[in-house]
Amino acid sequence: MDLYDWNRVEREQMNSRIARKVIHTANMTIARLELRKDAAVPEHSHVNEQVSMVERGALKFFIEGREQIVRAGEVLAIPPHAPHAVEVLEDSVVVDVFSPAREDWIRGDDAYLRK
Image (cartoon, rainbow, N blue to C red; front, side):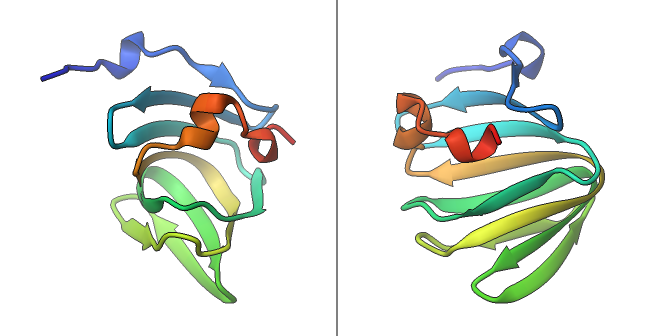
């Protein structure tokens, strides 16, 4: 068993509008993202199933040609390989859980978040 404390996880500034804290386990990646209004995550896809839990704020997800606004207290599940993008509608905090673990992030292949 492992216990993590978000207050002790290193905060990484991805760009001027996105920061994250990341925990990798054997089978999952958990990320807590701080997103400023008008930030955007460009379209991308990955082999991982993703669950996005909005703690604060609101985001508009674009998934396989559909749009979905997700607000504080709501949870969105994104299937593996589904192309998706995000527009941040207001300052937000989101916890994303990925299964399996994000090997691309572990390798540092996350340039799409740094733009």
